[in-house]
Image (tube, each protein chain N blue to C red):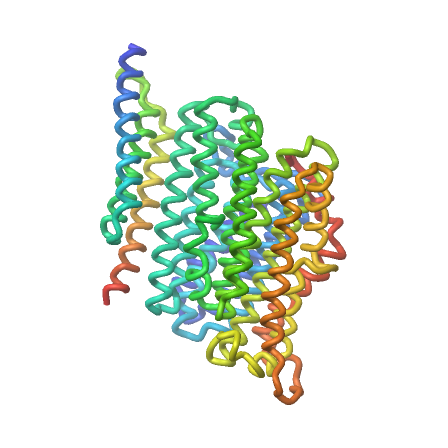
Length: 94
Length: 479
């Protein structure tokens, strides 16, 4: 049981770390605003992945609610930040 | 009195809602919210001063599940500085922004203030992330208020850099939660132990914060963003927003990661700080615009604050370390007052002259004696001449560096001080030029008096009456 939990956590947490690294790389390398924004959102998705993986406690146990709350808040923040950056980008395109 | 703690966060938030609902009365409502917020902020500090650490578990839910607000000596010191400066900025902004731009300014400004107070009072690592993001979003939006292309481009860059910093911080928070299962600063501090996880979390969190605190070489976003914002916004960004990131880095360093620190990390921060002092001061000296000069000067002044980290790491706990900590806080607070004063006065000069090119300021500044005097006072504090708070703080840092035998930090601080003197006198020498002596000292009380008062606090208030800060910092688990 614990082996299965650990495996799931490593799988999801590990892919989260891969997503963070991919996002970071893309953020630093690409100049266009849209690519940077998508990159930062991929990074965010990676961090949320890790948090969700932390919350998992096996198929029979309810997951830890705290990381879920963090992810929900994080999504709200990420959406607002993306919206503001897009508004800036739109202003620059005019 | 304990209710003042949540009030410091909720009052500006309510004010932001009120000015959004009723934009026609934005200025009146905004100023009212500003006065009430500043009163609650000062009230919190007074309560910490007399009663010690304040803590409120919001909604009656205690940690680890609930979210607590806490004010100890360190947060109270930053809180009172931020709220006095923010009140002065608000009064100035009341005269600076006219109907249309005022409607955009006040909601964002009060949101920023709410995030700032929240950041100083939050004790939960994730809550701190939320306040950091709110601060970054409202600061970037405020910085772009003029709507010019340069301002929008600079603040878009600021926003993206800020997002990257927050992401790094959040990843660190996730690691901390994975390893220890708690987020409350006090609980994390009890659970933390040296190891790769704590190390990685510290690197990610402090790395994200120095990006937001514009430590060299991550300062590139700051000068254009701060120089292109409207004057009251520049003052708030330079005096308060970068200082908030520094406060959080210091808090994590002292309270959370104390068991896992080593000298290499402290020295790295110190070396970056030293590079910031030299590079920022040099660029300030070469800047052709008054506000750009002030922005580069912020880069340099943030550098001094980070030089404190290796000194702190090398000093054993005791009176010397407490004095050093208080000196660093004093330096940060004095810079907050001085830089706000500088930017507010520079804004006045810019508005009157129609530009802020230093070489062509002759007379324009002389027609505004109060504004020029404020720039001079702020300059005294930026250089670190007696009796400013900076003088006392730098003196104590230099003394400690000598005692520890770390003379190279002393050398860097001397070079920075000389360069600061050069760039301040460069501005002042251009301010006097052939014009007849003006008849009135104060020409526009609403915009000049806040700048003047902040300059007086930085130069005389904090230097001569610095002792209360030591008493305040004794409150709480400091260090």
